[in-house]
Length: 133
Image 1 (cartoon, one colour):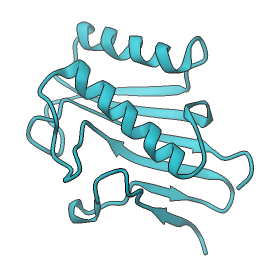
Image 2 (cartoon, helix red, strand yellow):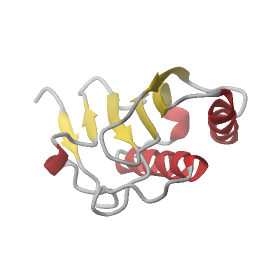
Image 3 (cartoon, helix red, strand yellow):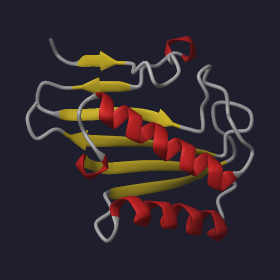
């Protein structure tokens, strides 16, 4: 088998949206699809940017835990912010520091005009490495 697909029960079922939450490779790489402020049906939970970041990061934590990993196993983040500005960057940087301290993973931030669903202001995906594949 080339990889395992995982859709944790604690996150919405993403298959109706055309993707899966997690792909784990035999070599220990774990790819986590974009997480956002989603409820049990995959709908956006709040219009507040900071709350969306918090919920998306919590969902990322749920996805990591589903494969017995944690935030410290993340080696790369990709973040997407609608109408990016310095205030939003400050919110994100504060949350990143809260979780990873002075050793954050690599990160690419892309400012975008819109995301997949109405009301989405933030999305984050990740690559993690499992010590024991």
